[in-house]
Image (cartoon, rainbow, N blue to C red; front, side, top):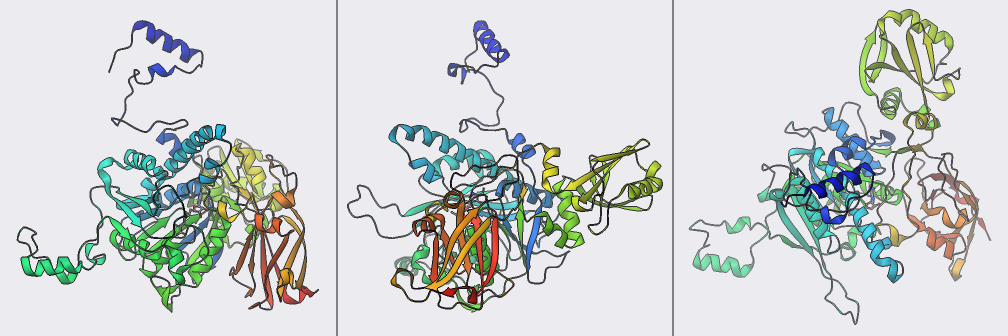
Length: 622
Ligand SMILES: C[S@@+](CC[C@H](N)C(=O)[O-])C[C@H]1O[C@@H](n2cnc3c(N)ncnc32)[C@H](O)[C@@H]1O
């Protein structure tokens, strides 16, 4: 490394003192203490330590339980929300020893992710803008993914593996980042997934028919279940072995066992595997996940997919007897996965007998059903949820015989019942009992609706009783952080977009007014029609998104279950904004197979949904 001259040193110090950027010529002259010989440098790259510390952990709000979920037993998890914040919460669960595998190790054994590539924004726009857009979208995307990879590494068990699915656009960048985060020597394979398919007539390049999967392990001790993934030898090789021996230094290869597959895999894409097609644009084939899950995890192990899409990872994990956690920030993905998990077939390729999934819970992480919903939660779930909401650690303990539920800033926290009123008299009585049992302060968490006074804290002698009121409008004041909602897509083409949201908020159902009728739309017989007359998102937060024409801009999609069983939303049709706007705000679907009741979900771009149940009789003949 070249030494800096005295003058150069002074110049750098001056710039720093004036808060000005240091010129580029010094970039490689300033010595940095670094763990690596080289690394990928780009705008906005944060320190790993800051990422781990500054990310907000968002609690999981149970929305629906499928099967017999028992409080102290593992259940699989389907999580709606931004994965970064959800991963931080999962890390907390790991720290609490709640991610146990059958061998006793704590954490996730296997991670598969198939992240989006932000292509829409990147390749749109005028020529002059393109270079700039590429750079920003490029660097932003890298940091978006790097942040998540940092958490994913922390979540892995010591013998865990991560498979990152990418393509020719971003693969080379991300490989460098994976090497930085996991270590170059931890790269076990660069797997090429190949497939065939039509090409555009007259195209001026070869058809792009492969994707890349990088497999890194957390340590030098990893799982590779070689006998579970063997494939038959090619017949010419088998014949040669029989006549000439195997050539493995005198070692006999057992032909009947088959060989270890190469690092390039051929599996047809989903559109060619009829039984698997769910209509989710980026769905991956089950056979691909089968090989990964069989090779790198054992039965009963925890498998995680943080960009789960249509839920291929969870579906295959379930079939192979693994536990699963799936996260996605798109509502369409969540409803697609919910339906998929409830309609599983036992064999890979979605064939064979029906398979009832093990108990799983649908959670919201970051965007919660409104505070009225809290009242419907059972005491245990409610307590866990609100403690986490305020960043308190759950802890059962007693102070002078009074039950406390958590710890915040080293002080006790009581979660007040949702059914009583929190009054001055209660605080008086509490103080009489606790008084000298407390050091200086304590916290009481209570729903705003039960608090009978306006103060945020009450002083009694030397003790301060803080009252933390739910919902979020109050929490926001404490955190002084704004919630940035990740936007839901407006068209099918945008499903694979990167979604990023920060903080948390409650769901406010949009105002929707519709006309419902039966008709012969587009010359077809027996169609049901929902004509959207009014659509307006409800925004309570300080930072509101402005819509010039809300009906046109704020509606993301409409999803329909046309034979609603009164319990689970089992999606049959979905319609994106672009299609609805083009069709003069009409949602049209066939009457065939319609039941007595229909459930219709209207989703706004901010992620709020309004669900309504309609009777078939509400659709009048026109
Ligand atoms: C390529 S798809 C995954 C497809 C999946 N492998 C399958 O087989 O169906 C990527 C998914 O990442 C989701 N996504 C994008 N940003 C996200 C975020 N910040 N948190 C969670 N999911 C996100 C998208 O909604 C999309 O469903």
